[in-house]
Length: 110
Image 1 (cartoon, rainbow, N blue to C red):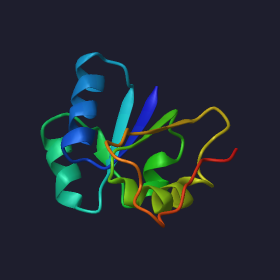
Image 2: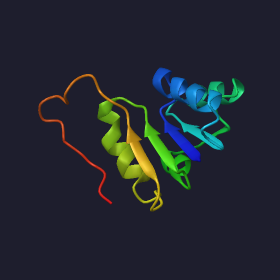
Image 3: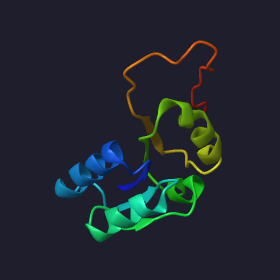
Image 4: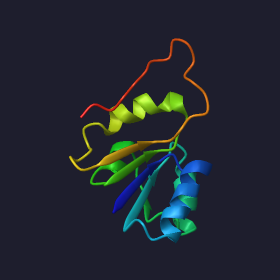
C-alpha cells in the first residue's frame, strides 16, 4: 500500500513510525508546509520521501492521511481532490473540539 501523510508533525510522525514498524506501507511519502519536518522523517527512516505539494504527495496513494489542524483541512482537501484515484481512501485525523462558530463544514465528495 502506498501512503501519503499530509502534516509530518507529532501526529503524522507517529503514524509514519507505526506504519513503518508494522510494515503496512510499501511506500510512504510526507508533505508539510515546513519541509524540515519531512526531511527529519526521511533522515530517521520513517518516510521514503517528501513531496513539494499536497497534490504531489497524494498522487497514486492508496491512503492519504490529513494530520493537520482542522482549519487547514478544507484547503488541503481542495488541493488533493483532483489527484485521488478511485480506490484511494482519504483519512482525516480526529479533532478534539468542534469547529469554531462560522467555520465551514466540509466533506470529501466522490
